[in-house]
Length: 473
Image (cartoon, rainbow, N blue to C red; front, side):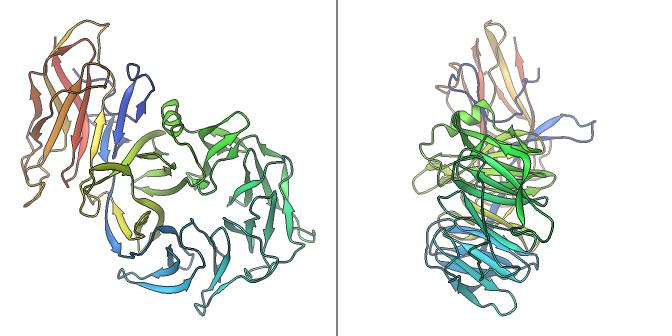
Protein backbone atom coordinates (compact mmCIF):
# COMPACT_ATOMS: atom_id res chain seq x y z
CA UNK A 1 0.00 0.00 0.00
CA UNK A 2 1.01 3.60 -0.56
CA UNK A 3 1.90 5.51 2.61
CA UNK A 4 -0.68 8.31 2.87
CA UNK A 5 0.89 11.77 2.91
CA UNK A 6 4.50 10.66 2.58
CA UNK A 7 4.99 13.44 0.03
CA UNK A 8 4.19 16.54 2.03
CA UNK A 9 5.25 19.72 3.76
CA UNK A 10 6.95 20.55 7.04
CA UNK A 11 4.34 20.26 9.78
CA UNK A 12 5.89 19.47 13.15
CA UNK A 13 3.70 20.24 16.15
CA UNK A 14 4.58 20.69 19.82
CA UNK A 15 3.05 17.26 20.44
CA UNK A 16 5.06 14.99 18.17
CA UNK A 17 2.45 12.29 18.76
CA UNK A 18 0.04 14.43 16.71
CA UNK A 19 2.32 15.39 13.81
CA UNK A 20 6.09 15.37 13.34
CA UNK A 21 6.51 15.87 9.59
CA UNK A 22 9.54 17.64 8.18
CA UNK A 23 10.70 18.34 4.66
CA UNK A 24 14.25 19.69 4.77
CA UNK A 25 15.90 20.77 1.52
CA UNK A 26 12.98 19.02 -0.19
CA UNK A 27 9.81 20.69 -1.41
CA UNK A 28 6.49 19.28 -2.62
CA UNK A 29 5.64 19.78 -6.27
CA UNK A 30 2.38 18.94 -8.03
CA UNK A 31 2.12 17.42 -11.48
CA UNK A 32 0.10 19.56 -13.88
CA UNK A 33 -0.48 16.86 -16.49
CA UNK A 34 -3.31 15.12 -14.68
CA UNK A 35 -2.01 11.72 -15.83
CA UNK A 36 1.23 11.39 -13.87
CA UNK A 37 1.97 8.23 -11.89
CA UNK A 38 1.84 10.35 -8.73
CA UNK A 39 -0.13 13.50 -8.12
CA UNK A 40 2.81 15.09 -6.31
CA UNK A 41 6.48 14.49 -5.54
CA UNK A 42 9.26 15.72 -3.27
CA UNK A 43 12.01 17.44 -5.21
CA UNK A 44 15.43 18.46 -3.98
CA UNK A 45 15.84 22.15 -3.21
CA UNK A 46 18.39 23.95 -5.42
CA UNK A 47 22.08 23.85 -4.68
CA UNK A 48 24.58 26.57 -5.45
CA UNK A 49 28.13 27.21 -6.60
CA UNK A 50 30.39 30.26 -6.41
CA UNK A 51 29.63 32.94 -8.99
CA UNK A 52 31.76 35.71 -7.50
CA UNK A 53 34.01 35.28 -4.45
CA UNK A 54 33.64 38.41 -2.35
CA UNK A 55 35.15 37.57 1.04
CA UNK A 56 35.60 40.05 3.83
CA UNK A 57 32.16 40.34 5.41
CA UNK A 58 28.46 39.54 5.35
CA UNK A 59 26.23 39.93 2.31
CA UNK A 60 23.99 42.87 3.19
CA UNK A 61 21.80 43.30 0.12
CA UNK A 62 21.60 43.13 -3.65
CA UNK A 63 19.60 44.50 -6.58
CA UNK A 64 19.42 44.25 -10.35
CA UNK A 65 18.59 47.63 -11.86
CA UNK A 66 16.21 48.11 -14.78
CA UNK A 67 19.23 48.68 -17.04
CA UNK A 68 20.44 45.14 -16.30
CA UNK A 69 23.30 46.14 -14.01
CA UNK A 70 23.67 44.06 -10.83
CA UNK A 71 24.78 45.49 -7.49
CA UNK A 72 25.58 43.94 -4.12
CA UNK A 73 26.80 45.26 -0.79
CA UNK A 74 29.35 43.15 1.05
CA UNK A 75 30.70 44.47 4.35
CA UNK A 76 31.21 48.21 3.68
CA UNK A 77 31.55 48.07 -0.11
CA UNK A 78 29.08 48.51 -2.96
CA UNK A 79 30.13 46.24 -5.84
CA UNK A 80 28.87 45.98 -9.38
CA UNK A 81 28.80 42.42 -10.68
CA UNK A 82 30.25 41.54 -14.07
CA UNK A 83 29.00 38.61 -16.14
CA UNK A 84 32.40 36.89 -15.94
CA UNK A 85 32.04 36.66 -12.14
CA UNK A 86 34.39 39.53 -11.39
CA UNK A 87 33.24 42.62 -9.54
CA UNK A 88 33.91 46.35 -9.64
CA UNK A 89 34.13 48.52 -6.53
CA UNK A 90 31.60 51.35 -6.90
CA UNK A 91 31.84 52.94 -3.46
CA UNK A 92 32.41 52.65 0.28
CA UNK A 93 29.69 52.83 2.91
CA UNK A 94 30.18 54.22 6.40
CA UNK A 95 28.79 51.05 8.03
CA UNK A 96 29.66 47.38 7.51
CA UNK A 97 27.18 45.09 9.27
CA UNK A 98 23.48 46.03 9.12
CA UNK A 99 21.28 45.05 6.19
CA UNK A 100 20.88 47.58 3.40
CA UNK A 101 17.94 48.54 1.22
CA UNK A 102 18.27 49.60 -2.43
CA UNK A 103 16.03 51.26 -5.01
CA UNK A 104 16.63 52.91 -8.40
CA UNK A 105 14.96 55.53 -10.54
CA UNK A 106 16.51 54.64 -13.90
CA UNK A 107 19.29 57.18 -13.48
CA UNK A 108 20.42 56.63 -9.90
CA UNK A 109 20.81 53.77 -7.44
CA UNK A 110 20.03 54.67 -3.83
CA UNK A 111 21.35 52.69 -0.86
CA UNK A 112 20.34 53.17 2.79
CA UNK A 113 21.98 51.34 5.68
CA UNK A 114 20.02 52.43 8.76
CA UNK A 115 22.27 55.41 9.40
CA UNK A 116 23.18 57.00 6.06
CA UNK A 117 22.02 57.21 2.48
CA UNK A 118 24.08 57.04 -0.72
CA UNK A 119 23.58 57.65 -4.44
CA UNK A 120 25.33 56.00 -7.37
CA UNK A 121 24.92 57.90 -10.66
CA UNK A 122 24.57 55.33 -13.44
CA UNK A 123 25.94 57.61 -16.17
CA UNK A 124 29.19 58.52 -14.40
CA UNK A 125 29.48 55.79 -11.73
CA UNK A 126 29.91 58.57 -9.18
CA UNK A 127 29.13 57.39 -5.65
CA UNK A 128 28.34 59.91 -2.91
CA UNK A 129 26.78 60.12 0.50
CA UNK A 130 23.51 62.05 0.67
CA UNK A 131 24.45 65.17 2.62
CA UNK A 132 21.19 67.11 2.40
CA UNK A 133 20.36 68.01 6.02
CA UNK A 134 16.71 67.15 5.38
CA UNK A 135 17.45 63.53 4.52
CA UNK A 136 16.17 61.40 7.43
CA UNK A 137 17.86 58.41 9.03
CA UNK A 138 16.26 55.39 7.38
CA UNK A 139 16.55 51.62 7.01
CA UNK A 140 14.43 51.15 3.91
CA UNK A 141 13.87 52.87 0.56
CA UNK A 142 11.49 52.28 -2.34
CA UNK A 143 10.71 54.10 -5.59
CA UNK A 144 7.41 55.19 -7.09
CA UNK A 145 6.31 57.76 -9.67
CA UNK A 146 9.69 59.50 -9.89
CA UNK A 147 10.39 59.69 -6.15
CA UNK A 148 12.66 57.83 -3.79
CA UNK A 149 10.61 57.26 -0.63
CA UNK A 150 12.04 56.45 2.81
CA UNK A 151 10.71 55.81 6.29
CA UNK A 152 12.08 58.15 8.95
CA UNK A 153 13.40 55.75 11.56
CA UNK A 154 11.49 55.54 14.87
CA UNK A 155 8.73 57.93 13.72
CA UNK A 156 5.37 57.81 11.94
CA UNK A 157 6.82 59.88 9.08
CA UNK A 158 7.93 59.12 5.55
CA UNK A 159 9.72 61.44 3.15
CA UNK A 160 10.14 61.74 -0.61
CA UNK A 161 13.12 62.94 -2.62
CA UNK A 162 13.24 65.50 -5.37
CA UNK A 163 11.78 64.27 -8.64
CA UNK A 164 14.33 61.79 -10.07
CA UNK A 165 16.95 63.20 -7.69
CA UNK A 166 17.91 61.20 -4.63
CA UNK A 167 20.39 63.84 -3.49
CA UNK A 168 17.69 66.49 -2.88
CA UNK A 169 15.21 66.38 0.02
CA UNK A 170 12.74 69.20 0.75
CA UNK A 171 11.73 69.59 4.43
CA UNK A 172 8.11 70.06 3.28
CA UNK A 173 8.05 66.77 1.38
CA UNK A 174 7.20 64.75 4.47
CA UNK A 175 3.95 63.06 5.49
CA UNK A 176 2.83 60.57 8.10
CA UNK A 177 0.89 57.35 8.48
CA UNK A 178 -1.27 58.60 11.32
CA UNK A 179 -4.35 56.38 11.47
CA UNK A 180 -2.59 54.55 14.31
CA UNK A 181 0.08 55.85 16.72
CA UNK A 182 2.60 53.06 15.97
CA UNK A 183 5.91 54.01 14.36
CA UNK A 184 6.61 53.07 10.78
CA UNK A 185 8.87 50.06 10.25
CA UNK A 186 8.95 49.47 6.50
CA UNK A 187 7.45 50.40 3.14
CA UNK A 188 7.12 49.01 -0.37
CA UNK A 189 5.71 50.18 -3.68
CA UNK A 190 3.45 47.64 -5.36
CA UNK A 191 0.98 48.00 -8.23
CA UNK A 192 1.09 51.82 -7.99
CA UNK A 193 0.23 51.67 -4.29
CA UNK A 194 2.56 52.72 -1.50
CA UNK A 195 2.30 50.33 1.46
CA UNK A 196 3.47 51.75 4.79
CA UNK A 197 4.08 49.17 7.52
CA UNK A 198 3.92 50.19 11.15
CA UNK A 199 4.76 48.09 14.18
CA UNK A 200 1.05 47.28 14.67
CA UNK A 201 -0.75 48.35 11.48
CA UNK A 202 -0.45 48.92 7.75
CA UNK A 203 -1.70 51.87 5.69
CA UNK A 204 -1.89 52.04 1.91
CA UNK A 205 -1.30 55.31 0.03
CA UNK A 206 -1.53 56.29 -3.63
CA UNK A 207 -0.39 59.16 -5.80
CA UNK A 208 -3.11 61.82 -5.93
CA UNK A 209 -3.85 64.19 -8.86
CA UNK A 210 -1.20 66.69 -9.88
CA UNK A 211 -1.22 70.08 -8.25
CA UNK A 212 -1.51 68.84 -4.68
CA UNK A 213 1.05 69.95 -2.12
CA UNK A 214 2.17 66.37 -1.36
CA UNK A 215 1.70 63.62 -3.94
CA UNK A 216 0.78 60.65 -1.71
CA UNK A 217 -2.44 60.30 0.28
CA UNK A 218 -3.97 57.35 2.12
CA UNK A 219 -6.61 55.34 0.28
CA UNK A 220 -9.86 55.60 2.27
CA UNK A 221 -10.38 52.45 4.31
CA UNK A 222 -7.03 50.94 3.35
CA UNK A 223 -5.84 50.28 6.90
CA UNK A 224 -4.84 46.81 8.14
CA UNK A 225 -4.68 46.05 11.87
CA UNK A 226 -1.59 43.90 11.53
CA UNK A 227 1.92 45.34 11.63
CA UNK A 228 5.41 44.29 10.65
CA UNK A 229 7.89 42.60 12.98
CA UNK A 230 11.06 43.15 10.87
CA UNK A 231 11.44 45.68 8.05
CA UNK A 232 13.27 43.39 5.61
CA UNK A 233 10.61 40.67 5.67
CA UNK A 234 8.31 42.86 3.56
CA UNK A 235 8.59 41.53 0.01
CA UNK A 236 6.64 41.60 -3.22
CA UNK A 237 5.55 38.00 -3.61
CA UNK A 238 3.36 36.13 -6.11
CA UNK A 239 1.44 39.25 -7.24
CA UNK A 240 0.92 40.43 -3.68
CA UNK A 241 3.01 41.36 -0.60
CA UNK A 242 4.18 39.10 2.23
CA UNK A 243 5.61 39.97 5.64
CA UNK A 244 6.31 38.67 9.16
CA UNK A 245 3.65 40.19 11.36
CA UNK A 246 3.02 41.52 14.81
CA UNK A 247 0.02 43.33 16.28
CA UNK A 248 -1.79 44.06 19.53
CA UNK A 249 -2.83 40.42 19.84
CA UNK A 250 0.60 38.84 19.36
CA UNK A 251 3.43 38.11 16.96
CA UNK A 252 4.91 35.46 14.72
CA UNK A 253 2.33 35.05 11.92
CA UNK A 254 3.36 35.37 8.28
CA UNK A 255 0.80 37.38 6.33
CA UNK A 256 0.14 38.24 2.71
CA UNK A 257 -2.03 41.01 1.36
CA UNK A 258 -5.42 40.10 -0.06
CA UNK A 259 -6.70 43.35 -1.44
CA UNK A 260 -6.43 45.76 1.47
CA UNK A 261 -6.66 43.06 4.12
CA UNK A 262 -4.20 40.57 5.61
CA UNK A 263 -4.49 36.86 4.89
CA UNK A 264 -2.65 34.33 7.06
CA UNK A 265 0.05 32.53 5.10
CA UNK A 266 1.79 30.54 7.85
CA UNK A 267 0.48 27.38 9.52
CA UNK A 268 0.30 26.44 13.20
CA UNK A 269 3.40 24.30 12.72
CA UNK A 270 5.39 27.13 11.11
CA UNK A 271 4.22 29.56 13.78
CA UNK A 272 5.40 27.08 16.41
CA UNK A 273 8.89 27.22 14.90
CA UNK A 274 8.84 31.01 14.58
CA UNK A 275 7.78 31.35 18.23
CA UNK A 276 11.08 29.84 19.40
CA UNK A 277 12.86 33.03 18.28
CA UNK A 278 13.31 35.54 21.09
CA UNK A 279 13.90 38.53 18.81
CA UNK A 280 12.60 39.20 15.30
CA UNK A 281 14.32 42.53 14.61
CA UNK A 282 17.11 41.18 12.39
CA UNK A 283 14.90 38.73 10.52
CA UNK A 284 14.65 39.10 6.75
CA UNK A 285 13.28 37.43 3.64
CA UNK A 286 14.02 37.16 -0.05
CA UNK A 287 11.94 35.95 -2.98
CA UNK A 288 12.81 34.12 -6.17
CA UNK A 289 11.10 31.85 -8.66
CA UNK A 290 12.22 28.83 -10.65
CA UNK A 291 10.35 26.37 -12.85
CA UNK A 292 6.90 27.64 -11.97
CA UNK A 293 7.46 27.88 -8.22
CA UNK A 294 7.77 31.22 -6.43
CA UNK A 295 9.46 30.98 -3.03
CA UNK A 296 9.30 33.30 -0.02
CA UNK A 297 12.45 32.45 1.96
CA UNK A 298 12.16 33.63 5.56
CA UNK A 299 15.24 33.86 7.78
CA UNK A 300 13.92 34.32 11.31
CA UNK A 301 16.59 35.42 13.73
CA UNK A 302 17.77 32.65 16.05
CA UNK A 303 16.36 29.62 14.20
CA UNK A 304 18.35 26.65 12.91
CA UNK A 305 16.48 26.39 9.60
CA UNK A 306 15.14 28.70 6.92
CA UNK A 307 11.36 28.62 6.46
CA UNK A 308 10.26 28.61 2.82
CA UNK A 309 6.75 29.08 1.45
CA UNK A 310 5.97 27.93 -2.07
CA UNK A 311 3.32 30.05 -3.76
CA UNK A 312 2.67 27.31 -6.34
CA UNK A 313 1.47 24.77 -3.76
CA UNK A 314 0.73 26.88 -0.66
CA UNK A 315 3.04 24.64 1.41
CA UNK A 316 6.06 25.24 3.63
CA UNK A 317 9.38 23.43 3.79
CA UNK A 318 12.74 24.07 5.46
CA UNK A 319 16.21 24.69 4.10
CA UNK A 320 19.44 24.21 6.01
CA UNK A 321 23.19 24.27 5.69
CA UNK A 322 25.39 21.75 7.51
CA UNK A 323 28.77 23.09 8.61
CA UNK A 324 31.16 20.24 7.92
CA UNK A 325 33.75 21.61 10.36
CA UNK A 326 31.47 21.71 13.38
CA UNK A 327 28.87 19.22 12.07
CA UNK A 328 26.12 21.60 13.11
CA UNK A 329 22.93 22.40 11.22
CA UNK A 330 22.32 26.07 10.49
CA UNK A 331 19.97 28.23 8.49
CA UNK A 332 20.53 28.32 4.74
CA UNK A 333 23.40 30.61 3.79
CA UNK A 334 21.24 32.84 1.57
CA UNK A 335 21.10 36.50 2.58
CA UNK A 336 19.49 38.09 -0.49
CA UNK A 337 18.58 37.29 -4.08
CA UNK A 338 19.00 39.02 -7.41
CA UNK A 339 18.33 37.81 -10.94
CA UNK A 340 21.39 38.75 -12.96
CA UNK A 341 23.11 37.34 -16.04
CA UNK A 342 20.00 35.14 -16.55
CA UNK A 343 20.80 33.41 -13.26
CA UNK A 344 19.33 33.27 -9.77
CA UNK A 345 22.10 34.65 -7.58
CA UNK A 346 22.17 34.70 -3.77
CA UNK A 347 24.56 36.34 -1.34
CA UNK A 348 26.16 34.49 1.55
CA UNK A 349 24.96 35.81 4.91
CA UNK A 350 28.41 35.26 6.46
CA UNK A 351 31.12 35.57 3.79
CA UNK A 352 29.34 37.79 1.28
CA UNK A 353 30.24 35.43 -1.58
CA UNK A 354 27.78 35.45 -4.46
CA UNK A 355 26.46 32.05 -5.54
CA UNK A 356 24.67 30.82 -8.62
CA UNK A 357 21.68 28.90 -7.29
CA UNK A 358 19.99 26.32 -9.49
CA UNK A 359 17.99 23.10 -9.48
CA UNK A 360 20.76 21.69 -11.66
CA UNK A 361 23.28 22.05 -8.81
CA UNK A 362 23.14 19.35 -6.13
CA UNK A 363 25.35 20.56 -3.27
CA UNK A 364 26.17 23.72 -1.34
CA UNK A 365 29.28 24.99 -3.11
CA UNK A 366 31.03 21.68 -2.52
CA UNK A 367 29.46 20.96 0.88
CA UNK A 368 26.85 18.23 1.19
CA UNK A 369 23.18 19.18 0.96
CA UNK A 370 21.25 17.17 3.55
CA UNK A 371 17.79 16.32 2.24
CA UNK A 372 15.47 14.85 4.84
CA UNK A 373 11.86 13.74 4.97
CA UNK A 374 10.05 12.72 8.15
CA UNK A 375 6.70 11.13 7.32
CA UNK A 376 3.29 11.49 8.95
CA UNK A 377 2.27 8.90 11.53
CA UNK A 378 1.22 5.57 10.06
CA UNK A 379 -1.26 3.63 12.22
CA UNK A 380 -4.45 1.59 12.01
CA UNK A 381 -6.50 2.35 15.11
CA UNK A 382 -3.61 1.20 17.31
CA UNK A 383 -3.52 -2.29 15.81
CA UNK A 384 -0.08 -3.86 15.61
CA UNK A 385 1.31 -3.67 12.07
CA UNK A 386 4.13 -5.90 10.83
CA UNK A 387 6.19 -4.27 8.08
CA UNK A 388 7.68 -6.78 5.64
CA UNK A 389 9.23 -4.03 3.57
CA UNK A 390 9.44 -0.29 2.99
CA UNK A 391 10.07 0.98 -0.54
CA UNK A 392 10.59 4.36 -2.17
CA UNK A 393 9.46 5.21 -5.66
CA UNK A 394 12.23 7.67 -6.48
CA UNK A 395 14.49 8.72 -9.32
CA UNK A 396 17.18 6.07 -9.80
CA UNK A 397 20.19 5.54 -12.03
CA UNK A 398 21.32 9.18 -11.85
CA UNK A 399 24.70 8.53 -10.23
CA UNK A 400 27.86 10.39 -11.22
CA UNK A 401 30.69 8.89 -13.26
CA UNK A 402 33.28 9.21 -10.46
CA UNK A 403 33.66 10.26 -6.84
CA UNK A 404 30.94 10.78 -4.27
CA UNK A 405 27.65 10.03 -5.94
CA UNK A 406 28.98 7.37 -8.31
CA UNK A 407 27.11 4.82 -6.19
CA UNK A 408 24.59 7.11 -4.46
CA UNK A 409 23.27 5.89 -1.12
CA UNK A 410 20.08 6.73 0.76
CA UNK A 411 19.39 6.22 4.46
CA UNK A 412 16.18 5.04 6.12
CA UNK A 413 15.36 4.91 9.80
CA UNK A 414 12.08 4.71 11.68
CA UNK A 415 10.55 5.65 15.00
CA UNK A 416 7.89 3.81 16.99
CA UNK A 417 7.53 6.43 19.72
CA UNK A 418 6.31 9.41 17.73
CA UNK A 419 9.62 10.60 16.37
CA UNK A 420 11.48 10.89 19.66
CA UNK A 421 13.97 8.04 19.16
CA UNK A 422 15.01 6.27 15.98
CA UNK A 423 16.15 2.84 14.85
CA UNK A 424 19.60 2.12 13.46
CA UNK A 425 20.35 3.74 10.12
CA UNK A 426 20.02 1.48 7.09
CA UNK A 427 21.60 2.45 3.78
CA UNK A 428 20.84 1.22 0.28
CA UNK A 429 21.84 2.34 -3.20
CA UNK A 430 19.54 4.34 -5.49
CA UNK A 431 21.45 3.20 -8.54
CA UNK A 432 24.74 3.95 -10.23
CA UNK A 433 24.58 5.78 -13.55
CA UNK A 434 22.25 3.98 -15.94
CA UNK A 435 20.81 1.62 -13.30
CA UNK A 436 17.29 2.90 -13.85
CA UNK A 437 15.52 -0.24 -12.63
CA UNK A 438 17.10 -0.20 -9.17
CA UNK A 439 14.59 -0.93 -6.40
CA UNK A 440 15.06 1.30 -3.35
CA UNK A 441 13.77 -1.15 -0.78
CA UNK A 442 14.33 -2.18 2.83
CA UNK A 443 13.01 -5.50 4.13
CA UNK A 444 12.24 -6.79 7.65
CA UNK A 445 11.26 -3.47 9.17
CA UNK A 446 9.74 -4.80 12.37
CA UNK A 447 6.32 -4.02 13.76
CA UNK A 448 4.62 -1.14 15.55
CA UNK A 449 1.27 0.32 16.45
CA UNK A 450 2.43 3.80 15.38
CA UNK A 451 5.26 4.21 12.87
CA UNK A 452 7.09 7.29 11.56
CA UNK A 453 9.62 6.95 8.73
CA UNK A 454 12.63 9.12 8.01
CA UNK A 455 14.80 9.18 4.91
CA UNK A 456 17.97 11.19 4.35
CA UNK A 457 20.04 11.73 1.20
CA UNK A 458 23.31 13.69 0.86
CA UNK A 459 24.95 12.66 -2.42
CA UNK A 460 25.37 15.40 -5.07
CA UNK A 461 22.96 13.98 -7.67
CA UNK A 462 19.47 14.68 -8.91
CA UNK A 463 17.01 13.49 -6.26
CA UNK A 464 13.23 13.19 -6.25
CA UNK A 465 10.74 11.03 -4.31
CA UNK A 466 7.47 10.22 -6.06
CA UNK A 467 5.89 8.04 -3.37
CA UNK A 468 6.59 5.54 -0.59
CA UNK A 469 5.08 2.08 -0.11
CA UNK A 470 4.90 -0.59 2.57
CA UNK A 471 4.16 -4.29 2.46
CA UNK A 472 2.47 -4.89 5.80
CA UNK A 473 0.05 -7.03 7.73
